[in-house]
Length: 287
Image (cartoon, rainbow, N blue to C red; front, side, top):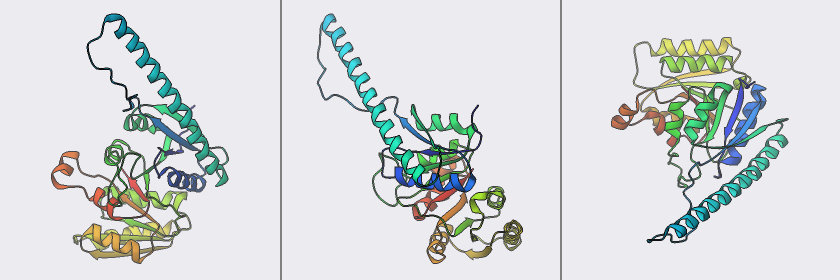
């Protein structure tokens, strides 16, 4: 029977693997949930032997070439699986040392988005790196899969940066919308945040009922036993949140993600992507 509440750590051979494991370990312990490390091998690896197989060849030679290529593909696939198992076992030992008693590991062939959507019914929290193995190492770049994967999933996603430290202070980016209100309720109910001070920040354009909405968020969290501060700071959301993260020494940002359609994002840009680029701390994305 499939678990219904596991923390699924999506790891690849990038520098993020260790920090994804650390973040998933922290979450699994706080939630008292099972943890799984998932490594996905590309179904169609873009690799080649380097040999030149061009030119016109006879039937027998062609058949021999196809057999040779098939053998080479099988050998590469076997090597990738063996390397993947070693990679996962190393991360599993790391998670065990950090206090997760029996983390599971899974090696799969396929596409990232398709595989994660398939796994979604058994997952309460996904953990992944903001950039993957193929991304350039620049602080303001996002992995090419981040937006596509986040849009495809309906579970919370913890997107980590290059470093992870145990969260001591949490910021909730609040705009009064439906997703933001669900975020408040999630923070209030989840063991993930128990004992952590919460800073609720409302920014962007001021609205007539903004103060009332912010007060609702503060009292909801306080009634759940959470130490809560709330602030309404007009201004550009990306700038205000990034500045407040530094000033308040925030370790974890919680926010709604990609509330608009991909077409609108293409035309007008995405605040979610802007915030992910500017915030240098792990971010819990809510869909």
